[in-house]
Amino acid sequence: MIRKQLIAILLVAFIGLAAKAQEHELKPLGLNLENYEYPFDVNYFELELHDGTYQMAYMDVRPAHGNGQTVVLLHGKNFNGAYWEETAQRLVAEEGFRVIIPDQIGFGKSTKPDFYPYTFQQLALNTKALLDTLGIERANILGHSMGGMLASRFALMFPELTNRLILVNPIGLEDWKLKVPYQSVEWWYQLELKKDYKAIRQYQLKSYYDNKWRSEYDQWVNLLAGWTLSIDYPKIAWNAALTYDMIFTQPVCYEFENIQVPTLLIIGQRDRTALGKPLVDEKTRETMGLYPELGRLTHQKIPNSQLVELDDVGHLPHIEAFGRFIDPLIKFLKED
View (cartoon, rainbow, N blue to C red):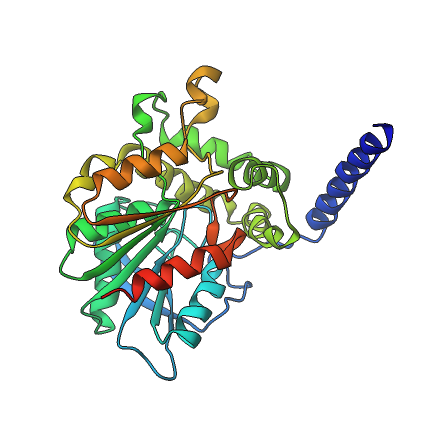
């Protein structure tokens, strides 16, 4: 027993030292990640609004021998298109799909506006405009986390353009407004300004990976933490606050019954992500982010849907358990 306790203490100490080493290696990242290299060539699509031009970064990864189909990969709130690298490589190189990976306005390498009409409808319109420009008339739409909310909205708005819909641990399967008191954008902004490496890593460790950390997760912490060291971090934090408000106030869960396209839900069962948990009492907190229940409920709501439940997997199946994520995805994409 004493030996086991000693091993546990040493393990915690080692993890702490590794985290500190990672923190010391951080470098400030530019407003639009100018000094961060993406896995594929980055292009820019210009969007016009009344107050100017906004640039939407995207990667267009094409196969040597295509199968004639396109997959659009939509990122989550605390991420950008770069974390789709392994997914895109497999879909392109081995399966022949063309893959489009946009950074939404306010995220990644795209413009960070002072003000922007952040709605899922607007982001869906932006994504459609990009596909129109690229001459893509029909695509498979895949969204993770916040990207799942956007993918759902896209499929509702443009069913004729959506071949298949894939939702990977999407947030917004429940309406947090029913349990969490509303907070202003300014409140979210002040919360973002307080973030640092330690807070970001702790949040991801607990919420995404259920306290099961692997070294390959460090890069996604470093991306967000590197931004906190930037001279432009207040603008980054402001956009993050605006998109928090968008997520909180624009649930799509009441419209799942209206989705017309074949849909696949891939749900990591260990995920407990939910917006606003610190703002409610412990009893209420325990009722939020219950992905095993939410996945099954959403599967029941969406006509012509399939559900893949991944045991012992958290919020990021394509990062944490790629093999178990990609196989059902490819099978679904190839169904007649």
